[in-house]
Image (cartoon, rainbow, N blue to C red; front, side, top):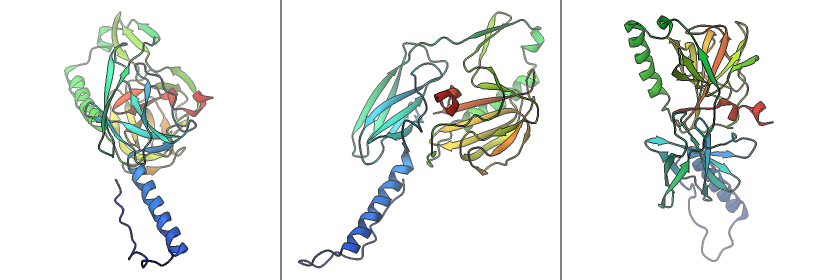
Length: 303
């Protein structure tokens, strides 16, 4: 949080009228300080700058926190939760893991700046996702010892990365479509290989020719780039307050770690690197360290 100290050099003498210019300057500085304090922990938002919400596996739940001058701090377990202003009140936006069971409850701990503490529960609702059944040779499903060791190293690195929670809030919580193309595989798709559920699709696939520009879905900074076993060439952006986006299977990468990028800036091109059956962009969105449905954030999906 940004600390603020009143810059006044003294109070007006007793019995004398307060100078209007001095009063206006003081009020302006106090308002500016309050805005800075709020920005340190929350996003000022409206219906046009918030994602769609639904309390389902892979969805985003919205929890009303009430009105106050400064945003509360909210945690889900050990993970901080994004807080945004909606009108005159604050709301928590909670990412719900795809693995969450319908009927289970998420427990949020809320610390208000006036010292009050509250707890909220979110009950996870049910949602059916599409399924895909594939018959493939066993060698294409089971990894070799060497590949498995590499995958585990990369998975550990990525899990730590996804817990990034920077204090700079995103300007908006809605996103641009990151590439032009056909949405070829939706979020939450259950993939059965040889009649065994082996994966849940944690992103949105956009099929497009190799070299198609890939754009930053929102303003942020480059948190990670690299070449991964499954994801191929990949970029991860940090948008602030635990909101991250991931771009995988890239043919080329046009940014470096720590670069600041504006929404719509080209960060790479579509490819088929890693484990991909053809050229496409795999686009994921993460909130409080779990993958959530990107279409809840994309502007076109809100029309």
